[in-house]
Length: 117
View 1 (cartoon, one colour):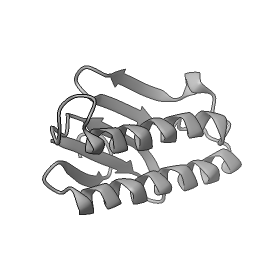
View 2 (tube, rainbow, N blue to C red):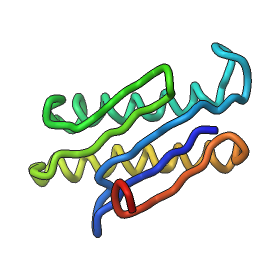
View 3 (tube, helix red, strand yellow):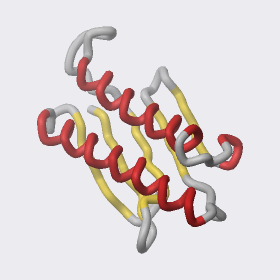
């Protein structure tokens, strides 16, 4: 099962974590895993290429073998980058919710206050 956790502070999405494998189908044919992967990788790339956030200022970890991706925004974002990051991250959340609605046996979503909450 893929577990997605979206981290928020009071007003904003500040990051997300994805771990696990869907096991919906065999490797290379798993549309659930592919959908989550595309959404999460696109969100990470868009934070850099669309929002203008320096890649080295983002806190992120990737382990493809275990199906792990963790992304956190930097604390000192300029207002315009923060606003555009929220569009990207809210769009990511909409996409993940759609996958959870369609494949609840294979993907879960938790929205919380931050890692460890």
